[in-house]
Amino acid sequence: MNKLQILVTLPLEHKDKIRFENTAKNEVFEYISPGKVTHEQVQKANIILGNVPPEFVINSPNLKWLQLNSAGADEYLKEGIMPEQAILTNSVGAYGLAVSEHLLAMLLEIKKKLYLYRDNQNKHLWKSEGSVTSIYNSTALIVGMGDIGGEFAKRIKALGAYVIGIKRDISNKPDYADELYTMDSIKQLLPRADIISVSLPSTPQTYKFFSEDILSLTKKGSVFLNAGRGNTADTDALCKLLKEGHFEGIGLDVTDPEPLPSGHPLWSIPNAIITPHISGHYHLHATLENIINISYKNLCLYINNKELINIVLAPKAR
Image (tube, rainbow, N blue to C red; front, side, top):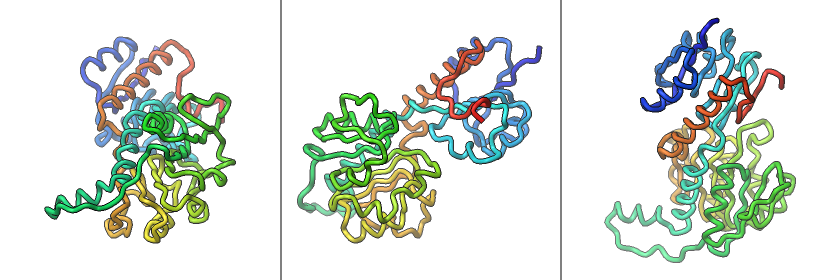
């Protein structure tokens, strides 16, 4: 019987390698950093744990299962990327803590004008920047109340916000949501919100969903946050409305294009808080632990011929 070739691009510690190898004792493990993985290694693998360049996966004759370390899988869902026989799983559920705290940090930076005080500190200026606003008694619209959106909703609910959630399944309303709707209601909900937080995946349906027409429906003086995918919002429209004074501020961990070009006008707008898609990744160690645990659980399920969790694409679904 041929041994499974398992390629791992996750940064596992020795204890984790032992745990994985004890679960799949009869298989062959190869460890490599994502930046050094080769096309040949990907093509040879039966199982891949961790992201690899999507183009390396094309026409892979041996691939049976690819476990992503990312929650987003859009690059692997493009036509012709995944081999027909392979299962694709992601790491949804790993990023809620890290990204929700990042969203909260951006929100507070805007509401308390910390971006201005940081600029003043760099200039050695002791100067008041005037009135600020509060999360308390505000209305927050959470567009995409999955793991990330749900964790963010819990945090601002604890700070006194009224929380309206948007998600696909509204059959079970969580305690931290005051109201729950599907995307069909978003045009009616946007004018009510003081805070709009977006954590949507990149799909044909979400591509530039937040166009100028949709963004114009938001309340004047609201805050717009995006930590999902940059192409769900029209960057030029965000720029235009921000310059016109429509928003109190915007916080973006994702942009379109990405990386944001150095000459883009968004960089120079003081109340645009921009971070380079770093709210997730492995910057918070707990996130990496979550990803490793999801990957390990799926490896156990796979070795025991049981259905995997976090399935994005399965052979039978095509």
